Image (cartoon, rainbow, N blue to C red):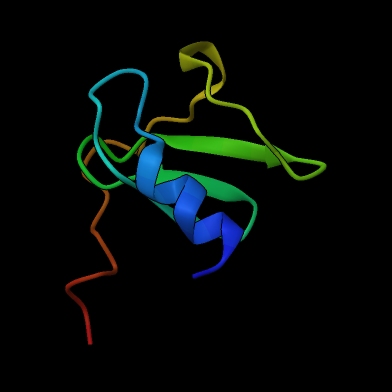
Length: 64
């Protein structure tokens, strides 16, 4: 198992405690959909740095 995978298994969203998945230079919470930046390889898990999903945004997970 990779170090990043092990780290993602123990990290959680500081707001809702949901699990993360990596999306390029972002960690995305699977519950609330907040996106946390990864800067120079460092996970910035501050609620004030999180980017909220756009209102009414359609998830691409369910699209073919």
